[in-house]
Length: 513
Image (cartoon, rainbow, N blue to C red; front, side, top):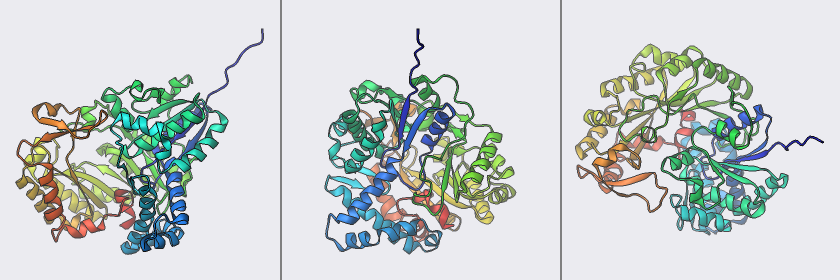
């Protein structure tokens, strides 16, 4: 009897539109490395990057509207793209802003004909919602209504000629959901035998809500929760463990992204090491903290830096742990780097900040959240404002830029507390380089929701947030008015706001310092 051997599976991995296109998608780089280690035939498609460039070229060539702005943006598109990839541009904010705004103009024009608000950082459909499963299904059933359809149909037709067994979509942001399902609809029409796998952080959050593949009426064959390497191997029946595999970036167009040099995204951990904050999505979803050994992180970063010669390393952790910060200070990765860190006593040590700077630390993102100590205590942030002030001064002195995040409208905050936050920023305006000001959203799964009067935030069965009646009467409309009319217009604050890079925000901010 002649032996029978199954053909090995073939997989296509897709990063769908729309997300910022300044760096490659890190999750797929990890998956690709895992599949390569198992000798699994696979293709990686950054459909976000490809799709954005397709729309830009199409809009520039066809000029869907006759405005002077569109004409100027079309004429200068190639120069603008070159400019965004040039470090000299980041020394002149006006030049940078002109380039980014003109490029964004073409995306906006490309979406108008199908009632989609497109930008370099977001996708909003006027008729369909990414948190409504019925709308996602409708997007799959009518993919031609998607502004990226002309790109999808040609790119997917070519990718499906090899008859892949599985098509995996990495879904991390709500701005990707409608496009991902439009692409799934194209796959189902062209090659219905391919099995669809949905993974990524947004898929994980949906699964925590109880979403299963049946929610999408046969459009998704598998949903993957959490890190995707091991579940994917199980789905494709590839035996064994994933092993210690560094991300593989070789299948991505490394020099095509909109940044002045290669940005290397890298995670040292899954989840957050603190996990004590009230209303924290990580805690609400029950996500474990899984750090990589420091020795592995530093050796992998050195290896990747030597191989790829990045202009910048983006450490993706929810918060880089003090231990990992120490490891990076002792074993510099060989390129400039930035990422999120918590306000801790480590950063209040001036010599520690100097060591971080010498290791290549270009910028730290700091979630200070409030300038009211009582609010911080009620939210269990573990942050002392006196320490925060010392940290900001030490980082400035060491030459490390700060991107500070403040959150308004949390349940314990009052209008007076918001004013205290403004006062804190005023006092430290000279040591804060960039600001992110956000209005609080209440996670659906947060245990604290039981103490609040809640209503629907979005009309949809996939919403990750609830609306709530603020216990102190500090409602969203009031918070928004305060931010727009008072906070952002304050003479000490407005110059910081103006420094924020358009659309790319923290992803481009390190290049300005």
